[in-house]
Image (tube, rainbow, N blue to C red; front, side, top):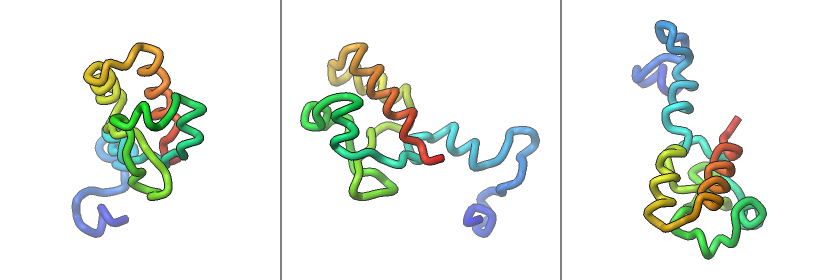
Length: 102
């Protein structure tokens, strides 16, 4: 509704591309993370202290964390930069995928 009001877009179909909400979500999934607790991260990936470079405060719930990435490709790049192994990368990407706001 805000996008309609501001004249930045419309929430109706865009010439066969689909709804603008889906386009934003598909293009920028990192903006639509519902977040996770430290305990949830520990269960899914490992200790928060070890993965600090990957984590930040959730944009939608200040009491939770989220992975600091716009998409899975960004996570993979960060993993290479931080020296994370393939299993750590897989776990981080899997958590990123299940934390979307639905």
